[in-house]
Every structure is written in C-alpha cells, then in structure tokens.
Image (cartoon, rainbow, N blue to C red):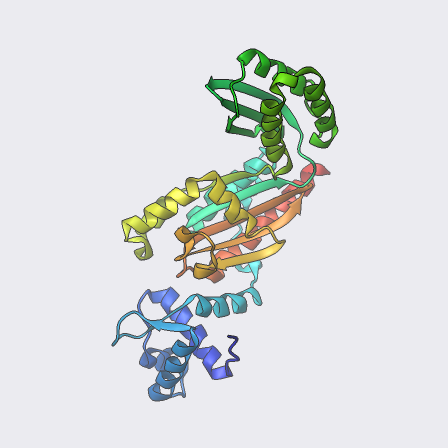
Length: 341
C-alpha cells in the first residue's frame, strides 16, 4: 500500500529519524515538540506518530517507549538527503591522500575502502567489474580423485577463480593436461572466439571423454561469461564500538557475509546502477543484511564499472556517508582520467 503523507507527517518522520540517528534512543513526542516541531503540541505530534506507526513508518520498541524508524521511515529520510547532498562541504585532507595513490584504479579503490571505514566508523567497500569481454590468461585442471576435478582459471588483472567439477566418470590427469594445453593455446583471446574451436576438438579427438570435457568447458564458460569482479573491504573493527552491534551474534553474521565472495558479489550487483544507491534494512535480500544498510555509488571509469560504498547499521549517519562517498568517487574518477591522458 502506498501512503501519501501530509507535510506535518513527513516532518514528524524526518525528525524522528534524525533524532534517532543522533541519539540512538527512542524518540518521544515531547522531544519533537521541543527540538524540531516547535509550535505543535505534544498531543498533536503523539497522534501523528500513532498514525505513522499504523502506516509502517515508525515502530515502538516497548509499549511505553517512544518511536524509532522502520525501513520505510529511513527510506523517506534517505530520499530527502539524496536531493540535497553537497560533497563540497567535506574536508579535502583525506581526498588529498587518496589522490596521492599511485597504484592505479585498483590501488585507489583499496585505499578508498580503508578511508571510508575510518571516516564513517562503518565498513568501507569498493569493487571493480570489467564491462568489456573478459579474457583469460591460463586454465588448469587438477584431478582430485574419482570423478572430481579442480578447475583453476586465471583471468586478466590476475583474478583467480577456482571450482570443483563433478564428472559422470573418472578422467585421467593426462587427458586433463591435454585439455589445459588446448585451451591455453587461446590465452588472451575472448571466450566467444575459442568456444567453437574447443568444441570441435572435443568432438573429433576426445570421443571417449566428450561428456566429461564438455562438462568442464561448461563450467569454464560460466566463469568467462559472468562479470569478473574484484572486491575490496576496509577494516571492520570500528563496527565493534557501535551500540547497534553489541549483539555479537548479529555482527558475527554480518562479518561472515562480508567475507563471502558470492555474498559480496550480490551486494555489489544490487548497487550496480550508476549514481548513488542506498539499500536499507528489509530492502536487502540477504538475511544477514536485514538490519543493516548499504550506501554505494557506481560509475563507469576507464571501461569498468567502479563502485565504492559503506556497510553499516540501519541507524547510519546517511548524510555524512552519502556526502563522503560522493566526494571520494569523484576524486577517483578525476585521478583515473588524468592517468589516461
């Protein structure tokens, strides 16, 4: 259901979110009346808060307590912040340190994830995904035992993927080495160029092992056609000091999620749209992120999708984080364009 809020209701929601981010305490009607909505009585504000709770923008943690924002309440607040973000208000000292990085775009992203962690006290993340066709440098197959083969794929920029393939019957290491040699002959070529040649080779020369080798090539194709993503994560130690993560089981679940390559890849994909992206609480698909938020900005830089962002609690200082991310991304893009020139 979509609710159309009155101007006063919007002011109540925004004030509750702002005060809750500031204090970490549930917000009562008297606080709003004294600090934010001067001229409105506590009773009037209390009635509005009750209606907003029914609409899903606010909630009570205890029966007699004030209100705190829901994901819907945070969304209203974040959308208002995005309309007035001004990256020029932030200090340039940390931007200067980023600009002095001389290790290319990947080095800049690694630095950016650390810088964002330090400034925000949350977890800084950065990622880069090639948009052009991925080329591989080397493929190796290692027989692990009966019907199991480990495939190692080295892509451009030194990115390494590995996967265990389960075959329908056993294959000798000799045949696997032969398949590796055939594939590596096409190193630095695009997958679409070599796929047909390899299938012809399998059909003509490896009839006895056609099924097994076809399965291996299918797995390789999955890697080659999926985006080759490199993710950088800043320090997580700052999060331990946040009252939102005093529940150790909650922060442990989040840390485990951030350390998983597949989980991080999905997180990055959720913010792959160019511009500023914010995914809050229940908007996240992963259970480990249901009480957390991701703020990230993406852009195309030197033919690659570049993303930097911050993972933190729902009760995040969104205005500071959005402003900081916007400024850091602009710096990375400017530095990268300078390198190209």
